[in-house]
Amino acid sequence: MKLERVIISGGGTGGHIFPAIAIADEIKRRNPNVDILFVGALGKMEMEKVPEAGYAIEGLEIVGFQRKFTFSNFLLPFKIVKSLLKARRILKSFKPQVVIGVGGYASGPTLKAATLLKLPTLVQEQNSFPGKTNKILAKSVTKLCVAYDGLERFFPQEKIVFTGNPTRKEMVSITGKKEEGYAFYDFDSSKKTLLIIGGSLGARTLNESVINKLDELKSSGVQVLWQCGKLYHEQLTAQLSSTELGSIKMVQFIQRMDLAYAIADVVISRAGAISVSELCLVRKPTILVPSPNVAEDHQTKNAMALVDKNAAVLVKDADAKEALIPTALDLLADTSRQAELSKQIETLGRPNATSDIVDVIEQIAN
Image: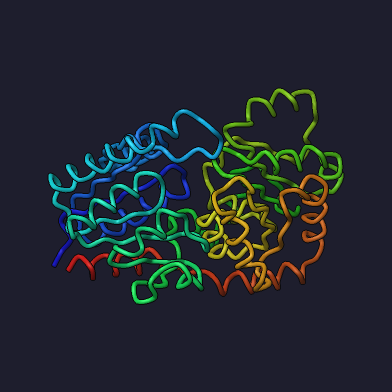
């Protein structure tokens, strides 16, 4: 039986949206006539990114619980009920064969409504430590696709399928692209390259770590591709306007991630689940700096899944300002350590994750 109607729900950040689009693309590749509808949260990134990828989206008026005291928390129960009712209307009208949740605010009410309507449902859990919503949903959904070992602590074991995280093929296809990468970024192929990525919005700690050791970086002879992020680009451009950056190239957003990965000798990154999955596939020596500002501290747990297997180096957020750049320069000088990290991180990559997830989707839809 071919897939004809599918709903995918979730978003909030690129870490949820881009895997969802990767799943949608694979479903569409196998079922060219399929009708795919996304359900997201109004005002969030998915309302822009999903249509850009060519898919229809409906928005729910759902927000998260704020950890600090705020009036919006009093409105949350009403917004949840309203979102549940709208999600139910969407499901009854669209009549999907299967409903997929990828995490983010919208996936809670959508998957809950789908289970109440007894529709086949799948949750794609990206992290090594699941959020509260997925823990609650796990009891009633049909299957859970996971990317880390040990999730039977939180989910019913008989529902778990170990697939890895979906990644966009164009991001991780780097073979034979080094020369193109050096030309694209106007870099010198004879120099070592450090890639620093803090997500599309940026990471203040990573930016402060670079600024704090700018002189050390400039005198090292290393070239740096530094994604500072949307939130910090304007401020940093003004701050560094009179500074000669030499071989350091600061950009707001990396358009060609494949070429950036291709030329990198060492990568510094946050430890979001999808970033980690991509790094396993590009097999680069990696230093992870988990963000402390995420629910359940799941980035530290994602990072430790690699660090415990000698597949990455950990620098704590609190230590990064002083320790991060010296650690990176030491690693760039140590080719045997680089080789060991590359060898170990490769063993954790799941290149067929997206295809494996769609296999499960087709199985439960039938």
